[in-house]
Amino acid sequence: MSKNNKDTQRKRVLLKVVIAVVLAIGVLALLSEVILPKVSQKVAESISENIEEAGTPTRIFYDESAITPEQLAGYDDCVKDIYFKKDGMESLVTDGKFYELGGNTAVMLAKYIEAVKNGDSVSYAECFSPKYDSEKGFDRFASGTEAFPPQRLYDIHIECLDERYFEESGTTLGLYSVSYRIYLNTGDFRSDIGDDTAPLIFTTEDDGESAKIIDISYRY
Image (tube, rainbow, N blue to C red):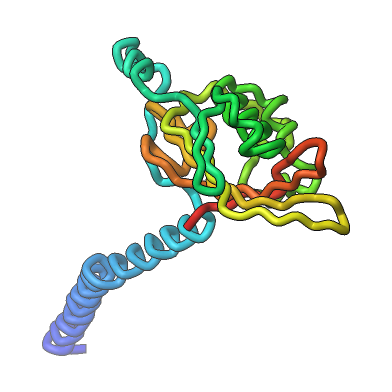
């Protein structure tokens, strides 16, 4: 083989190497500048959609250990009374008209609120009927198998939206709006709210002797 032929082959090999390197650099640039960002965006969107579908809380709450005595002192100035409203009439739980106005259901809902305030998971669970689906229901504490710390409730309002008596069963079903705020909420009891409120709808059943909660949902 002549010297010229050898030089020609070397040039061809070198050219192929250069072309391969250039192509590799181009592919890497394409990946880093176009493809990978799009993939990352798709993954992020997918994760976001899954979080929204699962109802995963995204709020940031206070760390209880980081709350100062000065901050907690502000809770003393909050209105902690329970306001109960039915048929256009409003009463405080401490009023003598309270039971007359709301009956068994009002008493049970007041017990519910006090249980939340005191972190009393036993009394809390007693407010729920066996009909309440603890596995799929809104409230994971309904079964009484999980505890929660006392909650700093204030701005508490309970309102009867509708109530119907069923003569055959002798029971009264009610729809009640329950709203409150949690001062410096740490998310231990409700991780769906911060210091604001998200009113709930309670479906209740009164058999004439006592009332229980059979369902809870958001009031949209």
